[in-house]
Amino acid sequence: MPFDLFLGLLVYAFVSSVTPGPNNMMLMASGVNFGFRRTIPHMLGIAIGFFVLLLSVGFGLGALLHAVPALQTVLKVVSLVYMLWLAWKIATSGAMGEARASGQPLTFGQAAAFQWVNPKAWAMALVAMGAYTQVETPVLSVVLVGTAFALVNLPSVSVWAGFGVALRGFLSEPKRLRIFNIVMGLALVASIWPMLR
Image (cartoon, rainbow, N blue to C red; front, top):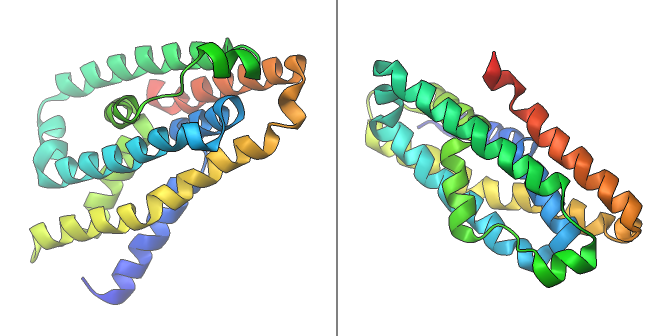
C-alpha cells in the first residue's frame, strides 16, 4: 500500500473512531458514572472487538452479508433491540454513588461483542475494506487496514471516556446526572436512526 494511501487510511480511521457514535456515547456515560479506570475494559473491548470485526469483513463476511440479505435483516433487528436496551440502561442509571456501589460498566467481552451489532462499526468496517484494500495484495491490505485502526482506535475512544470523567464534578448533583444519563440514552437511540431508513 503506498504511503499516501496509508496516511489517508489513518485519517479515515481517526475521524471515524473519534466522532460521536454508539461506542463513544456509552464510553462518555461510563466515564461519568464509573470513572476512567473502571472504563478501561470497555475501551479495550471496543478496540479489539472492532479489530476482529474489521478482519472478518475483510476476509469475506462482508461479501456473505451482501449475498444473503436475510442475514443483514437479522443483524439489523438484533442490533436495534440490543441498542435500545443499552439506551434504557444508560438513561435509567442512578446517581454516581449508586453506580459505583451496584452498577457495572460494560465488560471487555460485552464491549467486544457489541461491535457485531453496532451499525456505525459495520459501516466503518465496510467502507474501510472497500476503499483501502487492494486487489493485488488482498491479505496484506486487509491486515494493514486492521493495523491502522488498531493504532488509532484506542486513543480515539479514550477521549470520550476522558470527557465523561471531566464532567463528573459538574454532574455530581443527582438532578444533572439524571438529565445527562437521559440525554446520553436518547443520543444512543438517535445514533441508530440512520439504520432504520
